[in-house]
Image (cartoon, rainbow, N blue to C red):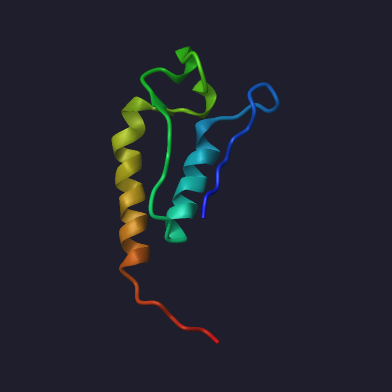
Length: 81
């Protein structure tokens, strides 16, 4: 399954926070991977700055994502009928 949270530039004011929340929600559903953008200074990025994760938050964010992933994938599947 492919999904994306892309807002064309100029249509809405967008920040990285909703993207990060969606990434965590996606991992909670068992996604195998994520694509994200990070920049040392998103306000100075030439492209997609408002949706970029500040580079200094990349490691803690990936740590949280890995924790969500490990929790979900470590649980046994419940067959609910």
